[in-house]
Image 1 (cartoon, helix red, strand yellow):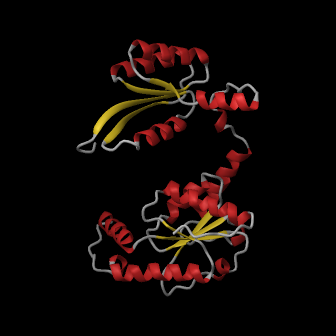
Image 2 (tube, rainbow, N blue to C red; image 1 turned 30 degrees about the vertical axis):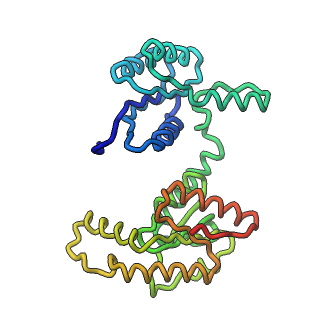
Length: 282
């Protein structure tokens, strides 16, 4: 736990995986400085017996309760328990489902975990993840046109985690490290279908990450161009020049999370697919 933070219990009760509640809860908590939730996640709550055990845990550690329970009896039960314990309780999806129902004039399915169905989109994500894991860190596919997105950048610009995040969105991503003096593979330069995006960061940021990397590996030699600020600045300049020469968009990841970087890349990818002008995000 971080010193100086105020902690509170956040109970997330779901009849599915609980991922939606985690995202919503963390997004809301991030609005408050020096406040941090102690998360209690209860996935796959689909019976009254299971819910009663959850309620016992909530009563033992009172706090905010967020839930997504499709079964009305379960929703009514947790609302009743929270009211008796004077705890705030919110059904996260109900207001949104009500808007959909009002606009579409159609009833909701009432099926727990429907968003995780084994449909075509699910298998597309699995295929993309397999592709990305097989073609990480310069392991380019035999046919570069099989990729949707190619990320390039110097070491420690978050190419791999960004590629994996994109794969979870169904995008077949590969990535290529940039090393000054080492030529870019010709098939990337000739690629027509994939979108090539350069990831850059400030030399200070890259230096800090690389120093921590060496420390984690117990590297004895810290006096190396790998962590030299001047050398890193030259790497970044080379990266910028390469992207400019090839009209590849660049994204500065210095202060961006993986999710924010991926969102910017996906926006560029939509522009790329539909023939719109690509603007740099740096």
